[in-house]
Length: 182
Image 1 (cartoon, one colour):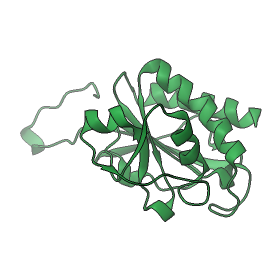
Image 2 (cartoon, helix red, strand yellow):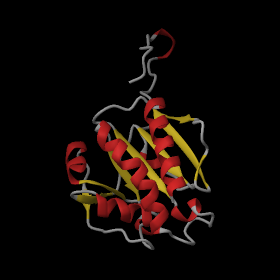
Image 3 (cartoon, rainbow, N blue to C red):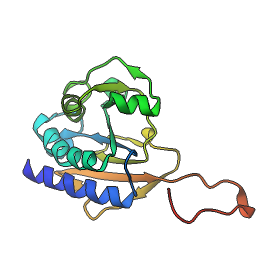
Image 4 (tube, rainbow, N blue to C red):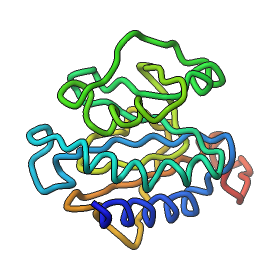
């Protein structure tokens, strides 16, 4: 489990830099603990693997002031666990559900237990995302998602996919654009 924790730390640090995340931004993470331990998604939930990955990721996000949304599995319709303050700040409607390892997933359960005031919401529009094990987080990113390749492509035995977002280019051939991404 120490390997999962250290790989998760490495990935989140690199993603924060690549996505140019800053204090107040929102990051979404979907995580299959089954995939991290080498099983098929949804077949062998591992609270220990989820806790290891979360313990590598969350303190770094807290230190940088980056808000976290953790996607639940399809049994909870991909709802997300966030801090109540995050839901209020972004104007997300709170729904009534509490994840557990077999309905929501081990990573979402771990987030629920670690957050000070956890709540569930149905939708977010995050600035960047980390998909651990093929959990399909794209619906929770801003509209223009850009793939991010990191030096590591796995956490444990799970493949990872990362994305950042950028503002839409609008206006056509006569428009002028800002070079710096926001």
